[in-house]
Length: 378
Image (cartoon, rainbow, N blue to C red):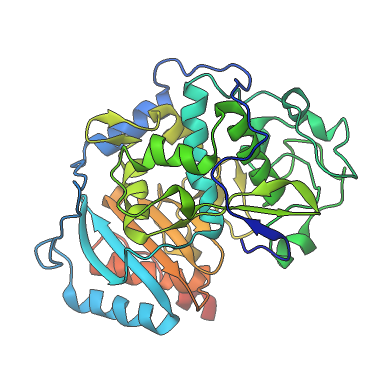
């Protein structure tokens, strides 16, 4: 989400970070959920790009060029800056400059989720550790003893019950923030930038390295991202909170690699980059949201086995979501990854949902569902 007022500081490592271990937790074996997830992706060809992406023509991939052209025209109409469609590990179509690094807004949170999953497996982070145990506090009015009982898992699910002012939040989030102390930890979902920012601080304290540097070595390099640099991240600071935000800039073609990594259960060219348990668990919904979707560990999902009509998504799909129309959609049923970015023109979820519906029609998916725009007109 966009920052509203605080200063922006470029950095690669905050000076207060010291290496350490945040609690203790081990992932042992592969859970039933992870095994099911891996079986669902193993049936699909897990093709990944090498140094450069390979392309298929829409005709060769079995897509309709005419329907894809309709999707193109609509994307241009709504002000899409970059669009990248990947199926079976190959680019089917693209629009705009897919190498341009653009602001991710809240898609940053799904990137952090992957890093936290790696840190959990490395015994650096314990999901049950509390804010009090981790020494996390904020500027006055400081956290109460009750708020300090929130766990890392509560923050990941955006159910901490900590309603302190946060940096890098929208005016809408400020207006909808519940009063302090109104909900115990773990009982209420509110899309809370304080939770997300605190997770960045917890992660950095745990591994002794910035989120941006860790993302380079633990994810970007192993999956061959072409454009990402550590300097593409920055910290947002301000007087309202001592806990900074950590925005990223990233290109569409690098984001597509990240989406493909999750489509393949965290595996890339035979290497397990993100633990399979974590990919399954972090995309399992814990709450129903205000748009009728699910919310997992910093990923948006379907709810109760259903798709997400407003987003034009089938059951099983999940996505990273950023303000003004930044999306990375992972659709396992169709072996599909779609990246959408904006720059000057904001695009709402329902507009993107119509675009996604057009894309899935062009792909001749089994059931593209109802057009989200038509639903809105009824």
